[in-house]
Length: 104
Image 1 (cartoon, rainbow, N blue to C red):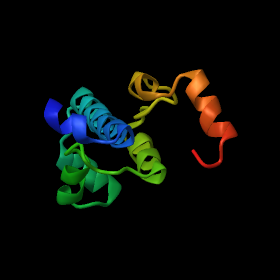
Image 2: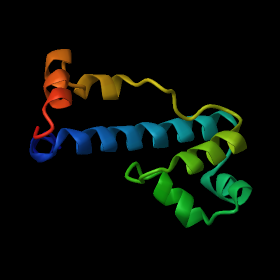
Image 3: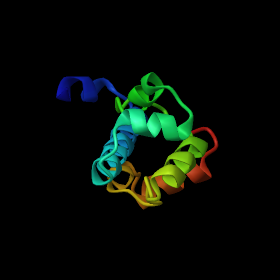
Image 4: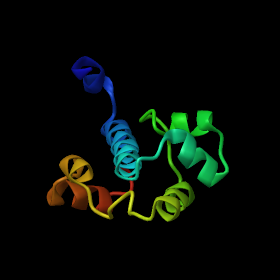
């Protein structure tokens, strides 16, 4: 896995880690409520296969889907800040280069 990460763009690493984090959080909420994927699918009007894809850790969640899952489970799935994102953010001096140079 480390070899694969070396070939990935930082944005893709962030996306993958965020997707896995969201899936893990949904699993936690399901476990706390003694619910299954099938229960979540039924409550959301989705197929069990679709929910299974969501929880694979590779699904690209929309904000709308996250909001619906949050409503159904009654608990926040994501937080506005993330250590995953912060670890890949550009240092201030590099950000200023991108912001000031339209060619960058």
